[in-house]
Length: 236
Length: 236
DNA sequence: CGTTGAATTGATAACTCTCAAGCAAGGTGG
DNA sequence: CCACCTTGCTTGAGAGTTATCAATTCAACG
Image 1 (spheres, chains in turn brown, orange, purple, blue):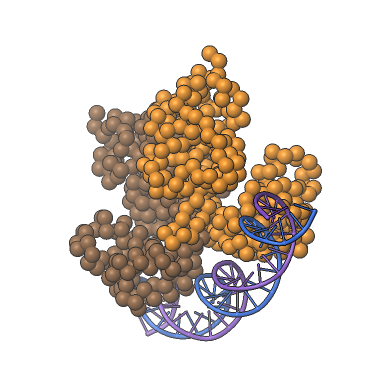
Image 2 (cartoon, chains in turn blue, purple, cyan, green; image 1 turned 45 degrees about the vertical axis):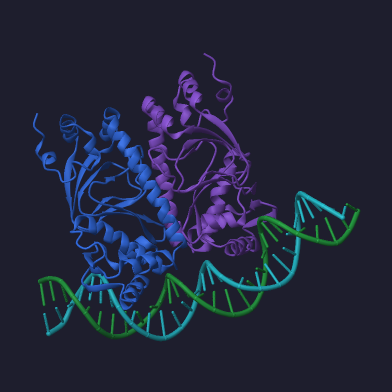
């Protein structure tokens, strides 16, 4: 049996939950799913609405946003290609899911996807492991949100983004300068770190003035001195 | 087959992961587990050490603590009777687990427990659901840690604790005053909310002066005006 | 070249932390 | 039985960090 077209060339075939499936199983699962292209800013799920779909992110970056009644917002998770989105076994979505960049997702209605978890034990196992990891990540960020200074938060964030960009880009000289584009605006970085736009901006210029990073323009950032950045990420 | 003694009278038989098991299955699982009594302040797992055990909390309250290199601490989770503790599929413990009160846990070495998850699909399913819930809880608290004022945090915390106490205690008059004991010291509350002892204390007296709560002494708290407390938990 | 959204910069104020002292309750030992 | 010590809680004064409000600059784009 040939793999249905969309899966055959899927960019995340070997990383997403589907990596646990044989080609045959994948073809079955694919029958209940569909792809969706998303524009920057488009929302996949609204907090409070029925949790109707879940799926895998193929390309782009999504954000998970928690909001209080009076409008304060906090980005509680970022979703990268290969990551799972949505919540099985939950009636209502707790968080709003929105595309930060153009994105492509592979979606399944929740109920049939839950049945697929029944049939494909290895996939459920992997979902459990991913969820446990996500829980650790979330808890680690609780420490940072509550106890880190603005300087530490921004430095740590840049290191995270550099690592993520560094794996895909050329690794070049390990200690050499690394330049990459942030997929987030200052406002979105502020929403991730629990700060305001102004504070993020001030900390960035402070790092620039110190010669730790450079800001070539646009969304680009250059890490000039990784060790110094690391030091600022750890100590107040 | 009779149920082995410890499980037959287990206080959380119907709430813990074991609730998915038949008496026979439970007897098998029990063969690889053992009970442990813990004193207040005793630590079950240290962050960074091998993640050797997991299990169910039978009585008492545990805390999960994240700490930064320089000693700042944050309580990233509280564990109540019936809750699962520990992390399957993870080599090293990420967080330190310590008893806040006298406690009793039912422990399993990690490897055999993982095998038990293989054999008992319903238990693995329930663990997945619990983990998804825990993830939602953690993300919700990220919003609160990053965006709430000290007043909102303390009011919200008291409501949480009141709800937890209220379910077990008499429900009495739904709107009437409710008195209960906090299982945490001020310092621990500060660690949960991302504040300092002094700030927690000041907010408590502020609520007391406003007539919203009363502090009869010791760890006791009385909710005098639940609606007012709710209002302060939501607006700055 | 004007418009728009994002980013930067500045001045000010508010909130929470830090440091310090005092107080209450409970346990210990003389 | 009472001084003494420990632990946890409260309160105060002052400092520091970050938020808020307000202008300006910058970059992209029609």
